[in-house]
Image (cartoon, rainbow, N blue to C red; front, side, top):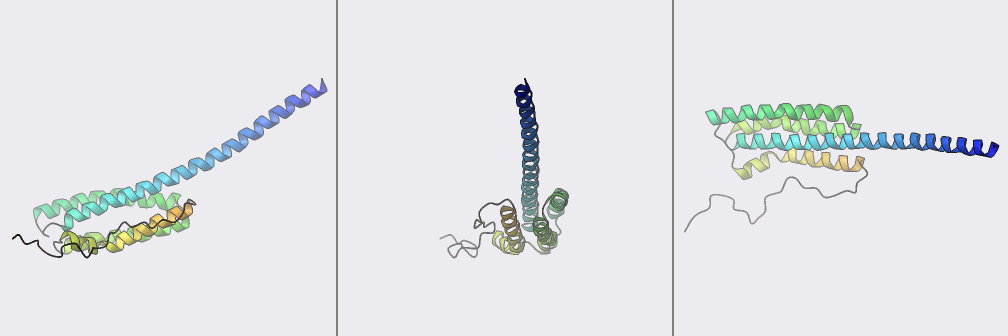
Length: 170
């Protein structure tokens, strides 16, 4: 009888310890998944803002179309700023610092985009510092998550074979 009680107590203790261990692991996984979602949303908001500024940069400044595009870009900036704050709240210090550097470069983009009408190639060059910052952000996130380093290139440099000016037709 005594051995049955000891066996039952051991089973209950094993069950309690197993549940405790499982809940700790589950909480860790949940926090990691939550951070990953926030980082993904941050990069998604960056791309949305970047494309809104691209649309603005390709228009003639001061036109009604440019003013409308600027309004759209400002609307996109709200989501980007929300995602920056989420990274600050939930990210590690290294990731939050990298997000801040992206934020600084994105905040320069409206003035750059409104300065003049850009060609596609000129705009790619003008936004390169923001692209470099988001690449560094991705590297810091991968390091935090224990993932191997990748050569991530978001900003594609101009290739020598690309046309530099207007294409002439024979």
